[in-house]
Length: 217
Image (cartoon, rainbow, N blue to C red; front, side):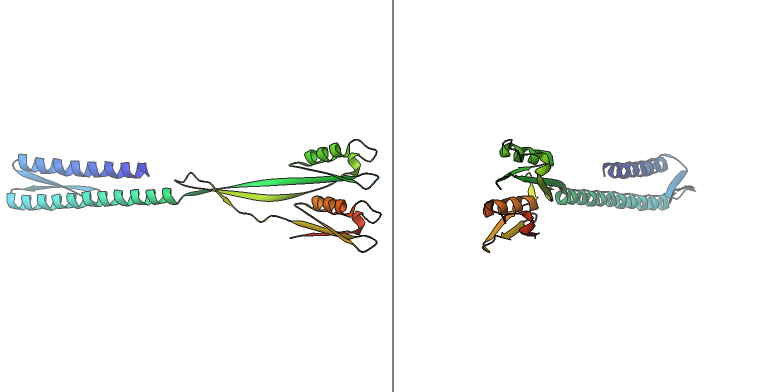
């Protein structure tokens, strides 16, 4: 943007300087010469008629004034467009967030669960809660994860960051025991909903994943 304005000013200065030289040269010399620039072509005309020369000089001065006005108008439009673009410029960032959930069931049907940003973190929390029993082994862990996109909007000229709301994933699981009693659980991932449902069931013989049904929005 700055380069365009500077080049426009430079061209205008050359153009104006040329005609100023032409006018002074015409007035100071006898016989008079009229130098004209038209579409990148230079023409030199010899004349002894001061009135005709003066008329042509005034025409060139008028053209110079028109050019000056056009340059100023162009500068105003360029600045207005640049200012408008700065005000309406918006930066949007997208961040992917992963949530992991793991759980483990011991020999008595007790559920130990853990949550983390990685599978390893969630597994570690679940195994720590399990406490080192015979069933507290990594191969007995059941894990799942969900990914969500978090968007942030940074409007130009505004220090306040706008966080775009995103749809949260919700898992729901249910199961029935031998008395047809229903137990449910909800979570951000399938494993979290399963763990809550098993905890609600209480560890009975029918409290197993095989008797559970799950779905999400």
